[in-house]
Length: 324
Image (tube, rainbow, N blue to C red; front, side, top):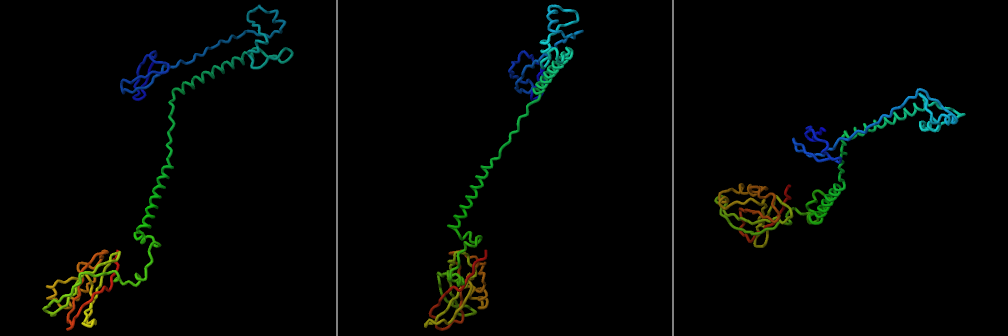
């Protein structure tokens, strides 16, 4: 018999007697593929039953059948009603009612036998074709696991909600810009605050400096600190000179962040000094975006001093929130 490799389709001549009825494992000598080979199935043999045609057939009565028992005449076959019943699908009518011709009964039997033979041949062909046709595997339909996806989405949503709730409880200031109802109402102090309520001073000092152009100058220096929770800009400071009676005899306001060294004071005019001290941004923009708890220097310079100077004072005038 001829077998064909399932993978490379190479054909080989194999002795069918070596194969078991349930199939035997074989290996292709070309591609080394292992598969199962089966012996060929024997097709069912259909025996043809020859039908003898009678030259002459006649119907006999029961009395004539008894006279003719044991006798055979050439060309004549004795048939009883019981024999005819085997050839018909239904019962045969008796004498005195409708008679059935033997030729018609034989034709019906022949047609019935031929239909049975044809049906068997058709069934055997269909079985052979079914064996030849490969059985297609059913496609595997993968079910989407929507339940797992929904659970994952719900977990992510819960985590986000928990994070927002934690921010609202512990860091509401971070969300106040995006969620208006989280903003705290301003207190009366904050409403009337000019930006000087939370400014403080340290390292205050007053000294005299001799200028070639302006004579004796009184210089007030120190550090101003931002105690606000946010950044501040454009800090302004005022200094007053008092006489022995505590009366203000001279006062001046300047922006912080404009330091001038003593060597420059000795050569600068008062107009140049004032222009420097009135720079609202400060030297190198020192007076902008001052971080919370950070300090910058300030300086206020007085000329044309009165005769009686007892003491001086310093106070913060204003500041502005830094632009973001």
